[in-house]
Length: 148
Image (cartoon, rainbow, N blue to C red):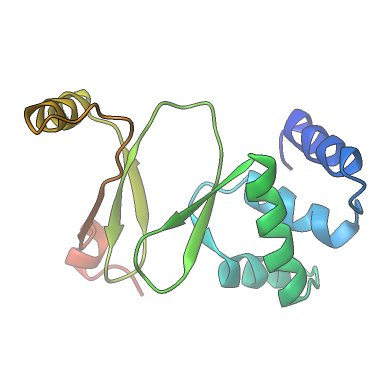
């Protein structure tokens, strides 16, 4: 179950905009807001089905758009041909490692990288505002052949 505060914020956000607060919409939100990984729309559908909850594909996509618009969910494009979604948490800026074999996404933070991006920008006459880094490779489990 998602943190009641986050769920309540989503319900309030919907009501303030006169958007319907429906069971399917809340099911998508609950799943995504408690996710411990970056989910695609297809994975959201698969996980809801596994939980015995039927939600149409169009509803999933519309709800993802609404969640992103609300600021409770962040959309990520790792160049895989589809988008992934993660809860917007109160954590500092972070980067991503993406396994090109199984699709696992791992987050990391490195202060040295933050300093380096500022130095690189400044050396080229830029005032850095933001950056995004995705490192593509093969995760430890796939290297060991332990992912089925």
